[in-house]
Length: 455
Ligand SMILES: *Cc1c(COP(=O)(O)O)cnc(C)c1O
Image (cartoon, rainbow, N blue to C red):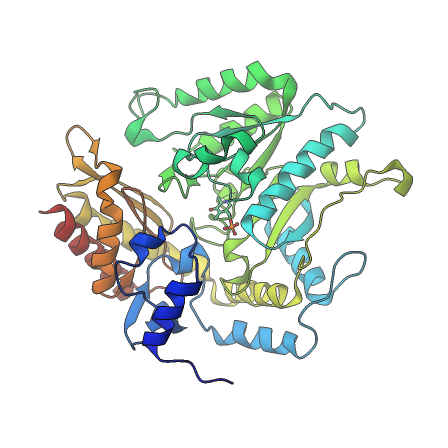
């Protein structure tokens, strides 16, 4: 193997050649880049030998830590057989085994697995399946051709998934390219769109959601939701029961529910899937990020028998789902995913996570009292800390102040990698994080907020 060039050269080439995602490159260049060279467990190590706690599990993907011997081994063994072969018309061993495992694990009724390679494509697949389902079921209902999504939703960055997205900062520029979508309010209780107070509101927003669904019910192909928590919106947690009632509304108005568990899947909310907590079975389920334990790009869209049947016909009826990616069902990715699921089973990861989630909640109380922390939201191991200029009036920091970026830089100086979403500091460590590391993560976040916002 070629020797890695020295840090200084890597910095120079990074600037010259790499265009980083979701990154203003001018701002990025203001400080020396952190260049990851290796990782172990919950820690990343850079080319200068510094150690950082991976507070966002490498953007919400890592599950059992970096370099888990079992996952490393599974990939190596698969590599000795085949790295990739297509699923278009032929099959592969790991993708078969994984599909069965996913169907066994997923909420009841989701019996078929369609693979792709990232969260956005898993969402595209779900949208296209839902759309085509209504045209092909018997009797067909082709007038059901629009989707409902929630305010501040995030479902990925391809044009279809941006269409159902609701974050103006990311999505507004593409409006003319997007298809029409109906929006309903998601319960952002700290800044309630209806100006009500939970729980005395009795989830009045659901009345609003029902009104919108019923108005459009004849044309709705489906409702897409991030169950329990909207991740990229700033970890906006929905009150208990919200998801359950959205499911009931979809039944009442006979439309499909698409649960996007790309972020929430694989233990991040404390259960394998968020839907389980409200005993909800969606019609379509999207999975990606944590699927391979954070190792390789792989995604899956799970569908019900009912949906599958609408595509199952004689070839000349042209009901085939004409969609597929070159790396669909990649063997290495499936092998990693199987190894990750084995770890969940063998180590009872979700059982031991319970105590850690409670401990995290205790730790977060010490941040709640900070004068510029307005709201702390936690769902499992997913946390959003919303910083405000004025705690009493909830006046936000103006976005120009880039307060989140400043806190992130402070945290990095203290050996923690976290990432902001606007004025919300996010963390979502790997499930393998221990109590001591959690404490470090919370302490550093607290100090960094204090250092930027003042005491
Ligand atoms: C990250 C995310 C996506 C997009 O996944 P990618 O793999 O980044 O394309 C979709 N939906 C949700 C809820 C996500 O958090």
